[in-house]
Length: 314
Image 1 (spheres, rainbow, N blue to C red):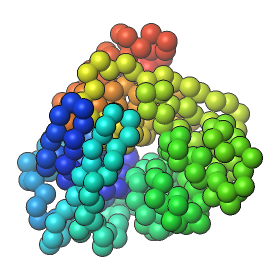
Image 2: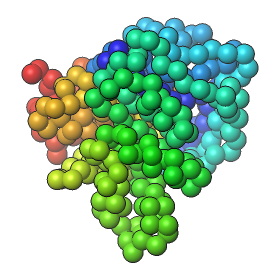
Image 3: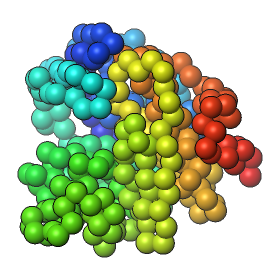
Image 4: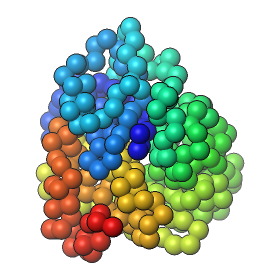
């Protein structure tokens, strides 16, 4: 398996300025795997209940996403209900963990030797458990959220020490820096300071998801900024960060993570992939677009980027 993605699989109820949808398929593993599958052979590890729609499973299979790591058990699938007053941040109205409360991820035998592993936003202890199961992956990437930063900071730092790439947003990285300094940092709200602090832990780089401001990659030698793609009609930003991460990781698989400038390639591909995701509720738009659609979008309006370098022909 080229890329293994471990994360949540959810059924959402979402309200945005563009409208409302009940029973909307979501979860970090789903968004990330659909994005990555445009460019890499992808398998997911997650858990669902008996209420999860068979038509969604069929769609994932049609997209060549391997589901042998997706466990189906008695009970109801993880449910999340949220509302966006604008498109930047969601207000959680209800969370029902259901079968996700007992999730204990297990890598199938043919996933254990994967070279690329993406750990979605799940409990840090579960992320550590998955890392222990994998046999010498070349690249481990992880995502997180404020809840784990506030409630399990020590475990989260143990995860970060083991990963090559950390995906995190602006609020989260500042909050995590406060945890590192026990709330005494002189540079609270200073993004660069927070990045440099966390680079003492993460192996390769940090990717800061900045929403409408794009994304920023920071490593020990340089900083790369990629702007967001201007989407005229935003419908639902749920899963945009996961789609970005999936596109990024798929790009690493396709291009080879040791290729010069591959991180910039991956950021561009992740940005463009996520731009499709926010054009519909759930993953409707993301599921239908192709690799060529993503590259064609890049060759058009994202003029600040030399998209000729996006072609994976080496």
